Image: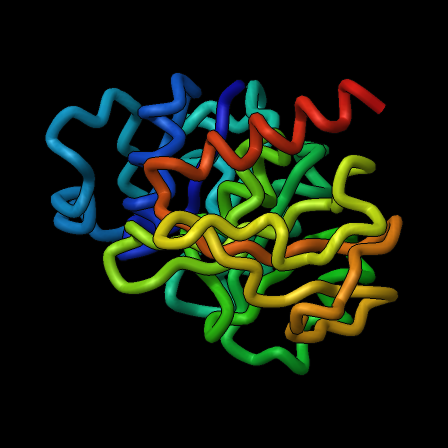
Length: 220
């Protein structure tokens, strides 16, 4: 699919690179030409110099053909204006915006724009918002080699101790959310249907955990 990214700062450039590597068509818009120097040398997408809320720049970026739009500039006003243009004028189905003032979140969401406050924003969360099929990473540490994933408990572990999912040195259950309330499991804590497991693991073996859980679901 085609994705337009407004802003080529740290988050925008990383998001563009990740989407590009996943095989998606990507265009990045930024008013500062030098900002594109942050993009990976092998980035194959479009680079458009212009204001992120300018329709001419957005159309040069291919917004008419876009399935998703991410507003990740360093300013709330630019993000909300460009996100509204994408949502209301171009009817883009999936629009996410980075915000610095969390008090504005309700306003954004009433407009149908998904938001993430800057203190919680990561490139992984942006990917998760734009591409729900991507591994559900909710937190990363430092260089991203260790991740925390949020995964629905499969039927195979319901009734079992949450800690039974752990493998020493490979994966650790750091919390379990039940009815929206997270708790740190002890050895007596058993998994119930509907629980969300928050599992820390190395990124390079994260797919193994996902595959194990998907296999468990398919055996349901």
